[in-house]
Amino acid sequence: MIIDAQIHVWKAPTADRPWPPDAIEPHRAVPLEVPEVSALMAGAGVSGALLLGPTWEGSRNDYTLAAAAAHPRRFGAICRYATGDPAEVEKLAHWRETAGMYGIRMSLNRGDVDGTVAAAEASGFWSAAQRFGVPLNIYAPGRHALYERLAQRYPGLRITVDHAAVESAAAPLAEAVQPLLALAKYPGIAVKASALPCFVREDHPFPSVTETVHLLVDAFGADRVFFGSDLSRLPVPYPQLVDAFVHHTPLLSESERTAVLGGALADWIGWDR
Image 1 (cartoon, rainbow, N blue to C red):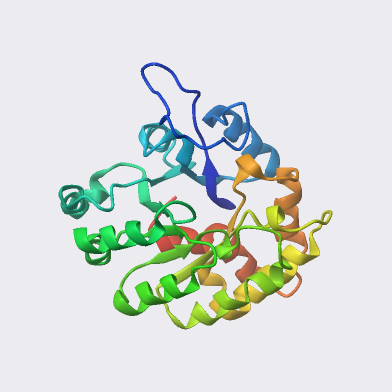
Image 2: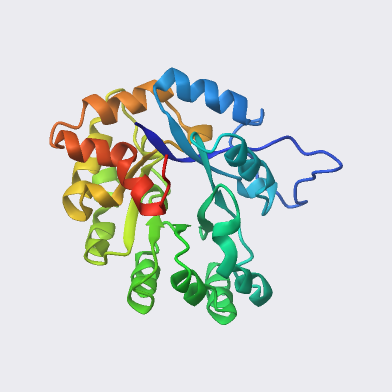
């Protein structure tokens, strides 16, 4: 069983389903839709995936939730949410009633990040997510102090650090994740080992990716490290990335590899497949 911890899917803008006027450039010109994702997963030997609507589509969850509802053993949805709206935060008490929803994504890599974090505090979002057991997926590259502050203030939160908190190939990958390793002491923090080939300049089997996965598992344990592709911007063939995790992680035991490739993620979010 291999589960991909993050794949963006989206549809082209239409009059009935427009994108925001200030939408950023998408990862690719042709939308990555669910049928193509299913075919690519089959070709790579991936049996399940968490789907996420991209920021350029706005705060939409309709497409990902529909896919999860139609194929509950194959897809789950990570949802965008109005984290600064107290009225919406109150609804988190019933989040488990949304079929296919397995968490909330916060993209804290551009714009007024501090303002977004403060608004989530003022609305009661962090407290509610902790109280109602909502898994959070937070992409805040380089903001290790933010992750630590949340872990200290809300020890019951389940926070997954997206893309190992890396944003570019400016530093060697194993060096870029060093500040993250110090957060392993907080049991509520897990890591997506996702999009990693985006941050290296090397061919299959991507030795820097292997080295980094070993570092993450050594620090966090295999039960808190999750394989992921971020498929829409993956610069290498999908089967090559899967092969790197399956056949080129020699320091992992078979049980650790099984956990990283999907078992740990399913347990973390409560996805009974």
